[in-house]
Length: 140
Image (cartoon, rainbow, N blue to C red; front, side, top):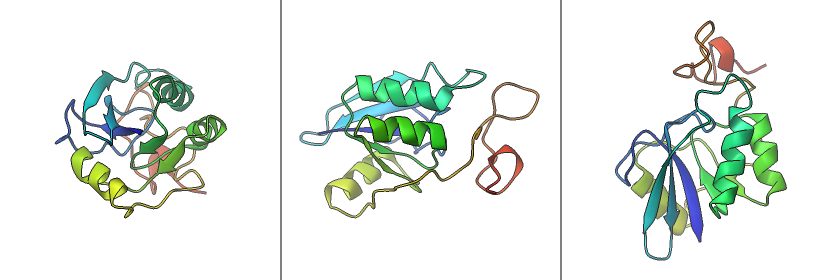
């Protein structure tokens, strides 16, 4: 099965990026043999709609599960409509997350963890993501 992980770099030792739609890379791992492909996230610099575009991209790569730190409502609903399960709240490396998933240790999420637009810094069009409790990512 293919699992897509939001990542900071292009390999299995990369850290999980806390932003789904604006992560620098997606690593799509085949859990059967741990082979993977790394893709630059071309949606990360979009002014809007990054979550939806990213969700459509990972769906086009055959992912059945997404592992990430946080995810917004638009991306979550797009993935859900495509039948893709989402695991949120993850940190550490891509490799550890995949191993945890294979061992049944990760819990499937049913709702977004941040409000839209998460990961955009005011005035720049792109950002670091301010987390679920501050700035643009504030929960309401």
